Length: 260
Image (cartoon, rainbow, N blue to C red):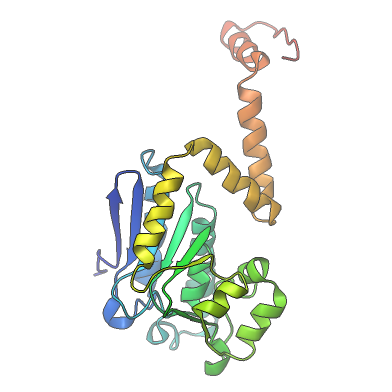
């Protein structure tokens, strides 16, 4: 039976804090955790009271060290593709597309899939002791959850190659200098710093904030078509012609459109 506590959600007024809760395994991701991350995204998307989300890892030893090697190393190639890589992409993309701003509080190492998960956030705050890496080549595999895609959009191909082709770790200061993180917190204070950012966001007009996030995502090539259609639909629905169209449908008469 899946552990229902692998992903925890705690609401603090308009802020939701989502915690990867497997500290004894450095918050390494399992299939159950991926499923619970997906469920958490659906829950947050539907919660009209939440205005910002903070994503962090339990304990002080790691944010997330990536995929649990014991969970995927025994998979056959097709199962690796279907059960693991495709599933992770779908769930990480859902988090990246969340209408709510997401702030990652990186309280320790963010490695492999953990770094790819941090990349779905809109803002990243890291502890000074946090480290970052794409170590997959060291175990004869490749980044599987958009490390070669989303991270390239974030910091550019040269920096991603420097990480992925060497499997080396970088510290928080280096991560900040290349734009991988946005802020370095005081020691042991990344969660409080991320919550402070979320609280500031929560004071702003939520629809404006959420629309702005979608526009910026679209400018980055993520969800552009859906963003354009959503905004066009919302704009057209507020027109006088839209009201006339609905009224004519109800009254079963020809519509008289005015272009307003």
